[in-house]
Image (cartoon, rainbow, N blue to C red; front, side, top):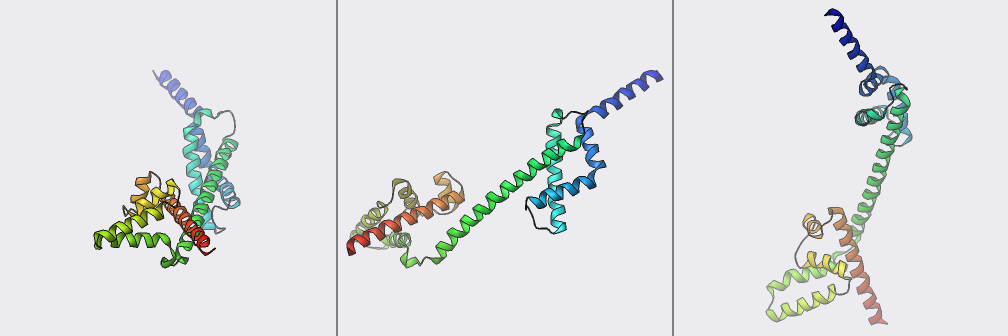
Length: 218
């Protein structure tokens, strides 16, 4: 009986020793200090954060967590006969590159939205044709029927100056008073994508009106 129990314990010990997930976990625990140093180097080289040690350490810990999660998901692909270090570092490099790509996309997006916001701030509402159309649409309900018809005709004419795709965007904003999330939901896109479409619609309308003025003056 004792021999049987001893054999079972020996088998369990060998099984644990060969379990890739357990091997990887033990390696990370036993080599946490040196491994974190390498991860801080990866984070610094990728410019994910500043060179402040606390920020580097926090970012490296986040990478370590994702490496551990990813390693456990793919542990069956790891050969227990080999050292875990190269395999884990390969995962770490992929994690860092993914984070860098996400950071670059986020920065590009923030720059784009910042540019749109600055352009809107520079525009004088009196010079923005869309603001004029919106004002026209809001006051027409208070006017006499004959004036409402004239205003509606003018609004439809102004909207006809842009392409059908952007005409629909302006129609939603002007005549259905949709903005922000409501506009995005109707268009079936993200909030940011809706802002970009509206910006392009405004620009196309402004260019069309400026072209008309140029032809009239000419």
